[in-house]
Length: 193
Image (cartoon, rainbow, N blue to C red):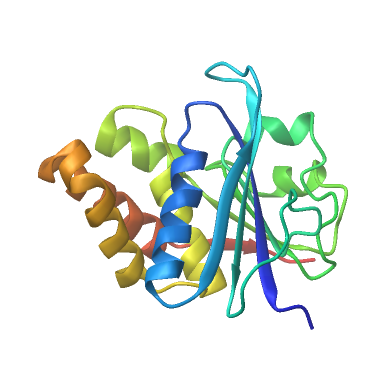
């Protein structure tokens, strides 16, 4: 059994994936774990496809490469399913969480790996209601911690407050906390195999 849990995030520039991974890592480290968070991007502009990576372990992490065999894949922009094999390297029992509010059966049609566990959450709707912008990173990581159990919701909320209170102010920070909670508590429908 491997001792590192790995997540790969597929998103577009400007959707907050890099920030989401950093918050996950900060929460993990504050909770006594070892973690890494980094992105793969070059001259991408807002809206361009990008990948972000997150690792968590009880032991020091010696890897310094992209996540090639993720345990969980988070797809922040469901339109990427048409062009990218998001399940590449995913374990047979791996998890895919897609930001999509429509018919979840459509998700499975675009996945090359058919045995994985598939979940969906309409993070865009939550972000639009709270922020008026399509930045669904907070509700999506709320769903990640609910499904994976890697970090407690309260530890994640504490990290968001520590990171954002000074930078964004209390009002916007609390909207981010609300987005996390919405992502965590919303009914997440699972597709059967």
